[in-house]
Length: 363
Image (cartoon, one colour):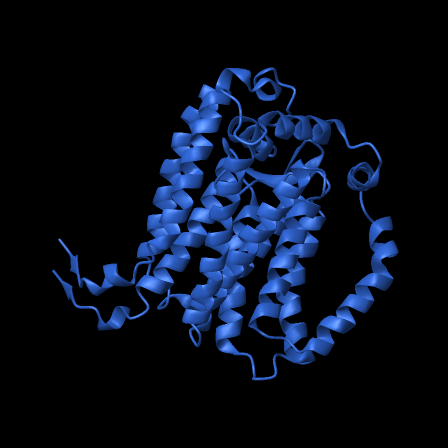
């Protein structure tokens, strides 16, 4: 049996599970009420997610960081494989079938993408005045390559999330202001061209968003939120969900379902948990200053959760187009849960074993 130096436990960040577990538990309560079969299946996702967390937590990541570029390029190869060997579902080609198992490379790309950014920043730390154009173009290559491959599937939502995560992380790490101003001008000028190249269903989502009348999905979501009032309704009176008026109540629109059951107060608690989690990860970025591998992963994870949470919540109240973006740890689904568990496993590893070589391992 291997006994680790007690300092390993002292470096473990217990605040992360303290903030995440209430979100997971509340999610399971809601899904159990809406669909017992899905709630039972959720236990399988919890088990896989925990195993994935432990796998990354116990790996000697710092000693194996030379593998990060290889893993990134393997992810790119998988995305290219979708183009040639992908399976089409609901008009989108996003999966690779391996026997009875479906693999979604864009989900694998999320932790790989953040790790690659962290690796690049560690290899080339930002100067005091921030990165210049040369470094910015280098980082942009690694950000834009998966973006274009995922857009082609098409999966504009995931592609934009990765794009924003990459560039916001760079903004926090440090890039010269004139670069951001130049980019804002270029994007403003190019917006009509970008819009004209969208798929018809993507244009429709934008039309529905800016139209005077919200789409059916958003209407039902707003009704569910209104039904909840301040403190919510009993389970049997959550009519929008249980009479199936609210679409996709356990995943994309689970925030509206939560509002119907627990009201404004319940959702305020959920949003506060997300806010504290994001702020905690950003504070870690400051505490880990100089350790660019850990601090960039913490920053990238904070940005990813922020984007997911904002888009999902704004979508349910009609302030953003309806896209298939889950609420982290809250929406039903295995892919998103496992992806975030892997990211938290990686971050906890980098924090907990930062001084691994100083720990005494007894056999």
